[in-house]
Image (cartoon, rainbow, N blue to C red; front, top):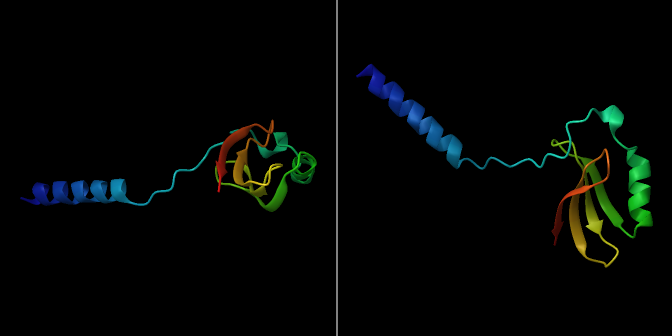
Length: 93
């Protein structure tokens, strides 16, 4: 009987974990930060490309992320690979 209780608790925990609001993290690079582009220089290059940056941050997935507008004036959230500047994920709002 004790094994049934344990099995039930394990199954319930697995179900709760599967249903939880676990947030998917966008991964951009596994490279060490010493290989990343300078943050200030990277932002300046984006501004020169026509972006207006409202917020810039480094994410848990090792991305440079911006919130702002692109050269066309569209509100965007963009994740960049900080090593080569490649866009990994782009959302328009």
